[in-house]
Length: 317
Image 1 (cartoon, rainbow, N blue to C red):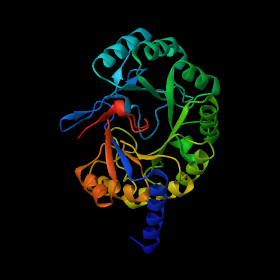
Image 2 (cartoon, rainbow, N blue to C red):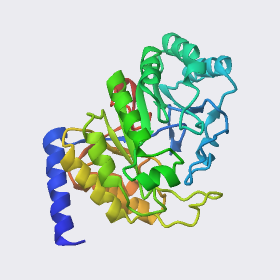
Image 3 (cartoon, one colour):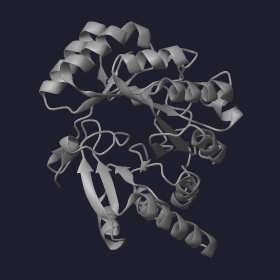
């Protein structure tokens, strides 16, 4: 690591501790199991395994492990069942139409009834919605809007098959104006493994007061055009996290669950602590040791990492 990188991480770490204290929250999302623990925040696909947008890095594969629902009544039944089984909340997701939008209007009444009758904390992978859709989601009980934000025109068109970057900007603005908590996700290396537009994406979201900023790293999936792509190095990803911390010193930053699970992934976890994350999903034993070495105080929560720490959702390791 260069002396310049060392200075960057030192500055980011100081800024983090000054604004957020010594706490760091580790998250177990979905229904993932870790030792004797399991996540209590399952993801639900409102479109089953169907997706028309067919982004180059996903091709609908990320829908496969989600709980599938066939319609509003089925969604409501499963929401009630999951709440009775101990879930703290749900991540509402699904495939998009060719314009990057999900069938939120179809599920509006069922979402509202689920929120009112179960008390589940609801967050949503919203796609790229307009403001009216965002306002309806908030009215129906959704707390957070999660969306991928890129900062490169070519990436928006070639990878996400959107009409252009303006679609992304308008979605971010619509979420912000609606009062939903904005939880942008930066996919590091989204452009076929290359860093391209991520810093512009950070500048874009910094103007809209995000509730939390989540970093994930391109994870090549079998059966997609990016199956053979090499993800960015841990150092490249950590640099972006550090730059985000200096740009948005008061915003919680998380290293999300979608990232390589190998030696490089573990190295990224450790660098991310130094770069300024205050949250991390699906941790390794090595990063717990690193957190202790850095003087950080861990706590653990069984939800998605976008959800603020809540004692009712916490777990003891």
